[in-house]
Image (cartoon, rainbow, N blue to C red; front, top):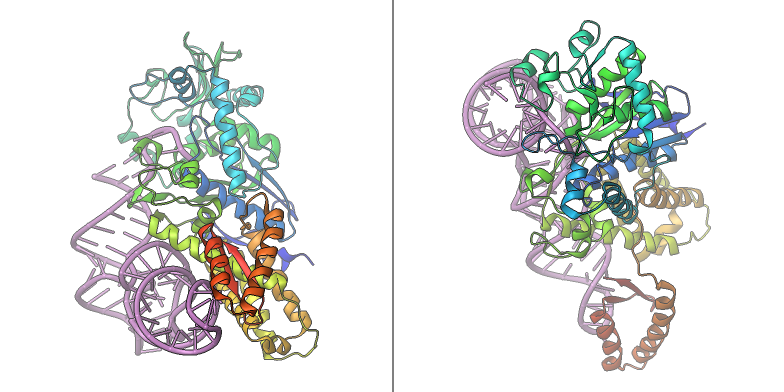
Length: 500
RNA sequence: GGUCUCGUGGCCGAGUGGCUAGGCUGAGCUCUGCAAAAGCUCCUACAGCGGUUCGAAUCCGCUCGAGACCUCCA
């Protein structure tokens, strides 16, 4: 029996706004598509939230025994700027400002995104398709929608015919929008004069002479519209329909709404079974966004180099910080909260180290403590299966930490558990921290060397203490502390250390 | 203006009809040569006002406040 049968996952489907039992389209397999970044700037905390939220989804499904295909795209054809920029492409704009080739910009920020994700211990996707690498698929899809009579061509651009689509399909269901309301607020955006209906959106755009990123198409030289890439790539790699489509809540409208319309237009069915959206990150109660100029990029967090940051925060601190909140809640950034997260994480990893060194004495006696240990493990699964509630899961892990510390300070308690219960407890603690939540120990590269060197110093200090030469023993400890290494004397005379 | 979400203790944040999540901070204590770590104890909250209920932070209504989307954004 697979774990997913024992602990079925319930997730909040944005489409229905309800928590639903997850039933994969193909039993045992899960297809996930996540809207990745538009690579025209350094990755910031918001990118991390989305990536980490769905990394948890990916990791937990895998842990439960599902075969997962996880696709996360890279948007490297910039989208049109809306207002004063007269339809200039974001990536082009950046390229012009930085005097670079557009693809150079794309490469630069793709690298920087991947590096940040690796630092955050976000597992790489199984497929990471780029929009520029799927121009043909996007053209084919556009042709298909044209064939269905749900799009029209004007001056080398192709638009989705929303009015016609509305006769059979729904628009606004995902984001809770009413077409009439949207019409009232229609703005005069790029290409409006070409559209038959204000809410029509571009599938293919004709390239202006100065537009460098351009490809030939049946409609002339141009570039794909904003929404078509995700439909084309998800269909190619995951099929229609597929299980889970994720992204930030800000993408719900219009991006995902348009994806549904396109998918319906092209394939005659809704392309996605479950829509999942992570919430936004706020800074002093306001959304952190590029357009608001209040975002902090990830390398700034890792180095502490930003006016709003009191100190540097390690990637795992950032990760832990996000896991303390549910992915569907807004999360407010503050130095205080991050510092709290840093300490809490340390507590957790300290217990993990303690546990890993701990061996069960082997006396196989089962008592009521076994039931307690059992229930922790059960709760871990229950909480994760309940819409990936990492906050609750962490609360259980902290309860388990308290238990581990108890075992450490009072070994007799260990005798009150059966080997089996203890092993199960131990494995679950390790697996949930490291594999499911993806929290890894952060150590320097020369850990091996450090370990050996410290062993020598610790031996010297032990000797000094045995001789009651506290002046020397304190000097060793204090000097190491100044370097960021904390020695801790145990009851049994053993000395442990941690990096601060 | 339309649509929607939220308002939890000093701070961050789960929960959501009855059983004080958890973390951080602060205070005291235990252990320790002194530290550190760990443990124990204390600070017991759900914006306000009504209503439903045996019982509401949790459901309903109103008021106040904050935010999101409606336009590129994770």
